[in-house]
Amino acid sequence: MSSGVLTDIGLVLISVSLLWKGGDWVVLSALRIARRLDVSDVVIGLTVVALGTSAPEIVVTLITALSGHHDISVGNVVGSNIFNIGFILGGCAAARAIPTTRYLVLRDGSILLLGSVLVLFLLYDSTLSRGEGMLMVTLLVTYLVYLMRHEEEPAEEMEEDFQVDPGRGIDFFFLCAALGCVIGGAHLLVQAASSLALAIGLSEWEIAVTIVAGGTSLPELSTAIAAARRGRSAIMAATLIGSSLFNLLGVLGLAAFLHPLTIVDTAQTSLFMMAGMFAFMVVFMRSGWRLSRIEGALLVGMAALRWSSDLAPAFWTGIF
Image (cartoon, rainbow, N blue to C red; front, side):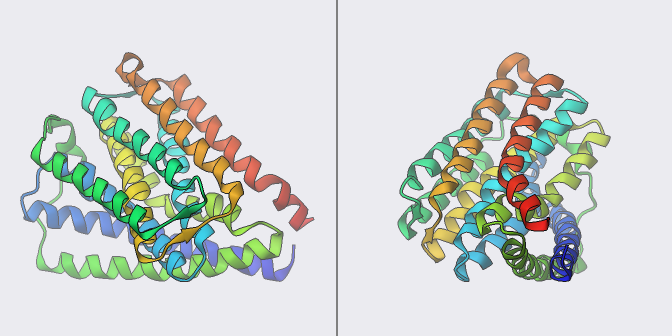
């Protein structure tokens, strides 16, 4: 393994650490500010926490879109969603079955599935225009407005998970500092990942949908682990679905609105894999209104298959 590859790997690890801690601080600061503004627990769980954990994806996707690295921009969103639903949600369910609710499955899960089908249709020609990006953002905003107006989901399960003190003025400073960490980590990650892709013979899409996506999904992973430890896996599932929806419609839509995107034709396989995983997730969560350990293991297997097909051949060839 050359010194250049080792340097790039080291830079990726440093940038991932910045994204992880920055994402944690974004979530905590945002929660405290939301509590100070008297936002309900339901809205906090499905919007503020989901948006906060998506901060790394937002920054990385926008930076890469504006700098012309379109494959990294779209691949990061697709790969992060596969990571969220496959490795994180599936992994937690494989360890301990996750109860679901009618609203989570039929409302939020269905919206996520329909959103993925829409993105598949819009990216059928491997391009995403400004108008299509605006349509995606508009659909997300409509969904968020609906959530705020129809809080059917009982809030009791969420109260313990996100029991935080009301925010103080300093939390706005911490929020800005956290976003600075995320932006700095995103810049470093994009540069290191692009260099690493060239060094070991991987395309920008393959690096984005695996390594970059895994790095930007660390805030979701840490939030999911914290919720699982408290025995509140239902809200963890809601946060992962909400984060995936933000990534799919909000992050990708905003990136396309700012700069039309074009991706490689081979990306279609990962797009279909993402939509397929969402479909399986909804079916699994509806079956008995729970995500069983076997079903969780199946989701992990799907994500692992996607990663291995993208990474393994070129990785070993590039190193050896």
